[in-house]
Image 1 (cartoon, rainbow, N blue to C red):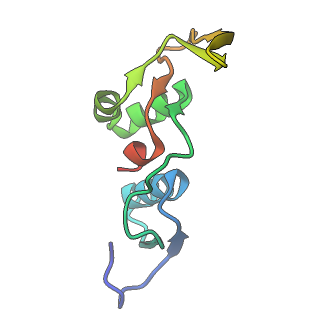
Image 2 (image 1 turned 90 degrees about the vertical axis):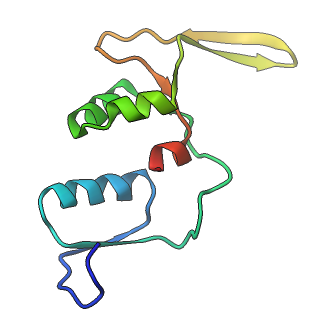
Length: 110
């Protein structure tokens, strides 16, 4: 991050997945930015619980895929259970080189 007195090209409001990705891309291109976030600490709940194969592909290009995989858990299916009874099952097959990875949003942000 740049000191407050530095010239600023971009102001990013929010350090969620989109803001953090934008910051990483600006950093790679040596574009001056400031990232602000009102939260002082990690959120106790997550808005998302899995990463798509395309997101994993992007993380691979960024060089952080191994760390992301170490924090997550690949899954092969998702069941919808109501009242103790399985109502639906969706298999998680992928035609690309990546499967679906279960990882909370706050772990992804870290």
